[in-house]
Image (tube, rainbow, N blue to C red; front, side, top):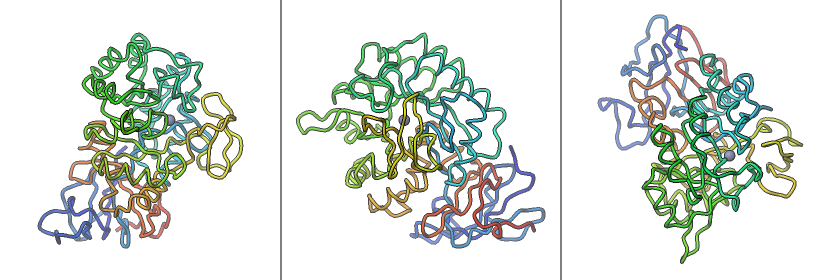
Length: 402
Ligand SMILES: [Zn+2]
């Protein structure tokens, strides 16, 4: 998908690090600048001269950031990744653009192998047919090789020991880029090494691992933690557990569900201080109820009730969220006290770096994909641009042709 014509994003406040040195006004964190996107990519031109055959997007009064990247999302708008259908993926992708998301990693549930295999294959089928929605950039397998002690909302019946033959089939079926697992279970080391050999990011999660077991797993290739604080062994000062490893080890990137429900704002602030913006990544863990009225839904074949913003199984267990990435950013900034200049990387750049695609997305550097989000001064989404195409626009008058 490339642009018919160039897109000139005018007069937005751009992080100063992406503005050429000649026009910088240090030490401000943001500098008013124009971006020109041609053939889907950000160019080095920081022109403010009118150009022929250019679409113009008025970004005045807005901050221009790299589009949001969500690496842990099960569904939205009535659809779930486990529906295993390109239609479901397209509907989720279309929903996400209104919330600033330009790329996401559809996330599977702990399920029978054949179901997960179908979900991964559906992503592979969908990839060549992506439309103007947020782009799918891989699959995240959440389980099934997790700890029965911390299932969270993953159906416990389908939790099982690491199975290299299953992983081989999943890798062959589609673009698996991440796997959440418990590193302390027997057979985890071999599976982690197998995943790393295929460039899959290995994520600690739904785990009862001790601090020492986490450090050992890092030597095998674990580099990230799933929804930090949730479904992992907690921090005791003489037994720091998985949480102690995540908060103390700089090399571990930490996912966070910043919905004020899964984690208290003070917990978010502690995480922000421990991990910094280089190692924090906001996720939604959103389920199919996201964007729809509260009521009765489903996750992993189990009934879920959505009430007062919370998604819960019948026994009260939290079951994903109805969070969106723009709301996550607002919540996280309020909890951490960070400015937008400090906070913006946690919605895009950290995730892009973790996946090794930070030259493509999570950046506004020349050569990167033209994936942007424009936010107003209340951090509400004004526009979302994907590959130089305007995928969402709150106020149509901002777009014009020269
Ligand atoms: Zn999840």
